[in-house]
Image (cartoon, rainbow, N blue to C red; front, top):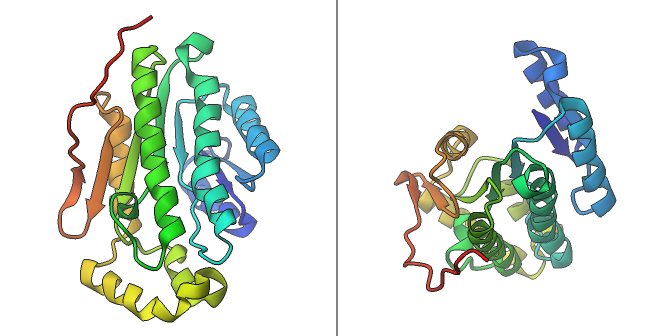
Amino acid sequence: VALLDFNSEAGQESKAALDEQFEAQRTLFIQCDVTDQEQLKGAFKKVIEHFGRLDIVVNNAGVNNEKDWESTIQTNLTSVIRGTYLGLEYMRKGNGGDGGVIINMSSLAGLMPAAFQPVYCATKHGVIGFTRSIAVTANMDNYGVRLNTICPGFVNTPILQSIDKEENMGQYYSYKDEIKNMMQFYGVMDPSIIAEGLITIIEDDTLNGEVMKITVSQGIHFQQYGQTPFKSSKR
């Protein structure tokens, strides 16, 4: 497992915890700003150099910043697109790869409006649209790579703390209590159930272009869509 994080301390702690259970060389931590194109490219290269191959990519870096909304788009959407294309470059069968799985983290906010977090909401809608579209392409062109999206509700991670900060919420800061009321209404999940959904996608090789929803009330389930209106025959 290769871990990428801007937060060096958190990354080293995660690697140390894994090292207690597994051999040290089986994990790799790389400090990386995913919004920096060259850093992200370099991180993928280091992973290949260390492990020799790539099988699974999880693009799950995310921020909530309505004040500096450009940075939210860079982290939540642009870096997910770039991480997907880098993963495909190494795993796509037509490019010498062995196939694999790419999982892009969205949110329930990618499927419905999110009052007081419009830019966050837009990025999460974008992740779903991009992933579902590239999954159709991957299937039509026989990439050998499956691409799916996970859309959790509120999860107990540090991103929830950003709601209390004016430097994150900007003009929506005064609505922080309304967001907290929503959290209380829908409930907050432990990250372990998201991990369970992730493993399901990795292990079930029938899943491609799917949008997995994870909520307190319904657990792991899938968004239902109508049939894709246009299916091209292979060129």
